[in-house]
Image (cartoon, rainbow, N blue to C red):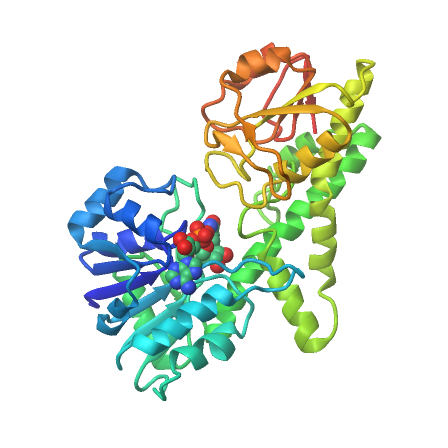
Length: 421
Ligand SMILES: NC(=O)c1ccc[n+]([C@@H]2O[C@H](COP(=O)([O-])OP(=O)(O)OC[C@H]3O[C@@H](n4cnc5c(N)ncnc54)[C@H](O)[C@@H]3O)[C@@H](O)[C@H]2O)c1
């Protein structure tokens, strides 16, 4: 069993992974280039909703420590890389963090180390970008050092599936790399699945997220014309879900968000275009439909106000839940950002409530919003309420009761004031 592990990147993915390895007895360094975060973690204060301070402190007692010093890379059996893979300004992959981490690993590691990339990226990244930097000092892959890709599948806010019981896919550059990576994860993950190689493991992750992206787009497009045809798509989905095979339910919403669904399929379409010169049309279409969802929500708000002979211009609109999904504090790529821009552009007075977000600066905006204290009182005072994320702390019947007019983008509310998206 590898005794020493360095997990590079201590965010939503890296911190739970590092603590799980410490829990089974490994000595783990969480390496991050953010000194303030490292100090905070060493003081026992977690920045991730899924990791309580208690869990972190148990990890610190069990052998976890956070650091900014890359020297720990020279004194470890395994390095796991969980750094961000965002989009660049032109919408393509931004692999700066992956390349930066790989470079530092290459400068520090000793022969015999197993290096695993977990960050979501396009197929070919491990071989073409990660390996040359990690093995820059002439170490031979599969002989001197070992390299594999293992996609991260963590689902923030999911209390059922954790690092331990979510199967892990591993694909090495050589069969010996796959074998070592499998042995490593088998120490603390219940099921480990071997891919044919690193590319297949990379593609598995992008297939999973593209599948979600495309299916969300399917129902998001359907909900728009079902509304015009006076068909309750939500009910139709419930009925379709009674089929025990060949169907998986996806439901409409205010738009996709987070660090995965709006980002990862673009990595794949960009790769196809750059390498082969043609478009991955399914992804491009899904992007177009999903990107339009916040505008569709805005148009429904416009229609609801219109029904009450009010204009959006000058109306007070309360957004409820501005994170990208329920029960997490993550606001990255939240559909609330383009929604607030559209409503403000139309002259609405927008306020919001979110128990996870005391202050909110929507992406691309120069306004700072402060969450209202009492969501129910604010709902009673607003001309229109939009439920975006049904965090579990909300009393939804009370919210429906208090609101004059509420747009439910999640299909979770009932009452005379409620309009279903
Ligand atoms: N958040 C999710 O739900 C999720 C789920 C599955 C996969 N992923 C993937 O996992 C990867 C990490 O995502 P995340 O959400 O944990 O990101 P994050 O932003 O929460 O955390 C990344 C951490 O890496 C640190 N970092 C950046 N560059 C570094 C470097 N060169 N050296 C050391 N530390 C560095 C940052 O300071 C930050 O603390 C991404 O590729 C993402 O697509 C994320």
